[in-house]
Structure formats: C-alpha cells, structure tokens
Amino acid sequence: MLNKKTCVVTGASGSIGKAIVNKFSLLNYNVIAIDKLNMPKDMNCFFYLKADLSRCFFDKKYCNRIFNLIKKKLTNEKLHILINNAGQQTIKKINKIQREDWECSLNVNLLTPFLLIQFFLKELKFAKGHVLNISSIHAKLTKKYFTTYSTSKAALSAMTRSLALELAPEIKINALELGAVETSMLKKSFGNSSKSLVKLKSIHPQNKIGQPDEIALFIESIIKNNISFLHGSCIDFTGGMHSKLSDI
Image (cartoon, rainbow, N blue to C red):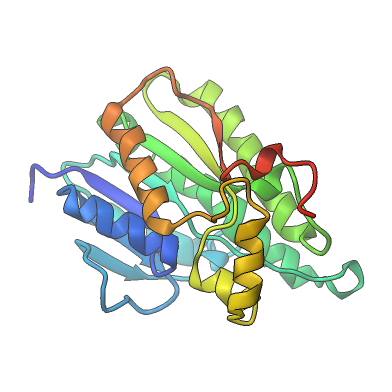
C-alpha cells in the first residue's frame, strides 16, 4: 500500500465518478473518493470521504478540515492524480434563478476545484502529478435555462488553460468537455423516459451518447501514456455534437 500511487476523485458517487473510482482502483491506485452522498455499495476504493464541497469556498474551517483529512491519506506526501469531477447542474429560467443557485454552481463547479489544486500544489509537484477537470460541452455550446451551469463550466475550462501556464512543467492539467453521458442524473432529467433517451441518442452523429466507462477508459489512457505535450487542453468528448450546427 505504501508504494501505490494516489488518486483523488470528487463527485465519486455519481455514474461517471463511480466508473473512474473503480477503474483506478483496478489499476492499483489508492483512490480517495469524495461525495456528499453515502458510499455506493458497488464501489471499490481505498478511502471514502463524505463531504459537501459546496461549503468549501465560504466555510474555511470546514474546507481545511476536509482537505486535511484527504492529506492524511496520501502515500508518501504525493498526489499523483486529482480528478475534479463533482458537478452541480441547475436548469432554470432567468427569473427563477436565485443567488443560492449561483453560489452552489460556482462553488462546486469552479471554486472548490481551484482550492483543491491550490491546497495540494506541493503534493502534486512532488508526484509530477496530473489534474483533470471534468468540464462540459456547455462551456462552448449551451441551451436555454443552463445559465449558471454553462457559465461555471466555461470558467472551469478557462481556469484549466490559465493554470497550465503556472503549473508546467511539474504538473500537467487538462479538461474534458463532456457531451451527453448516460448517467442516472441525465435519466432523471428526462423523467426516466426511454423515448426521450432514444431521441437524444438519435440526434448524435454516432447515434449514441457517452457511457461512464468510456470516460474512465479515456482518462486511463491519458494518464497511462503520460504524454507531456498534452497540457492545458480542453478536450471535446461529445460524440461529434460539438461540430453539429443543429440538433433537429
């Protein structure tokens, strides 16, 4: 266990987070999984931390306690991979958006990822680590009522590019701008309607949407191949939808 590399994954209980956690556990990493929900029964990880990341920016005492709990679990004071996967999606008309919606979206999608990178700078540098921010197609292309979500994800992608200038060459940082992925959150947003899911798949050039295991596999390939020139990139992972003018 002392010789294992360490990987931190936020938003671990969701479909994508769970796939990433299980993938890197199988790859023999000490995976520290973080989520505000209880640990899923089918998850395999080294340490599970139940924490509310939406509190981290404005509650410094709480933030330090959570981050120090993570720090105590690191192997040889090294953090090899930090995956900022946690996301908060609010879909509301402009006249329905509350201050709390902005606060939660920015805290989870942008500010806590920054705080994690900042707090673990030494450990990431010591390990010559890799940061992966899970962004969204909404950073570039969006729809009505996604204002808080698309704004926070666009900022996350911009932060990735900006920090790349500071973190190189010791730390690599990239972002994945994901398109539609078949998660429990996506299904819930469609009211678990199979007809709506079929329609969503049909408007994609590949006639399908992404799978959580595909994202975990792609992240594995990025880490495993250790391509140093892949840095500060915001990678489209959308099944071709980022090239499509219309979904009609």
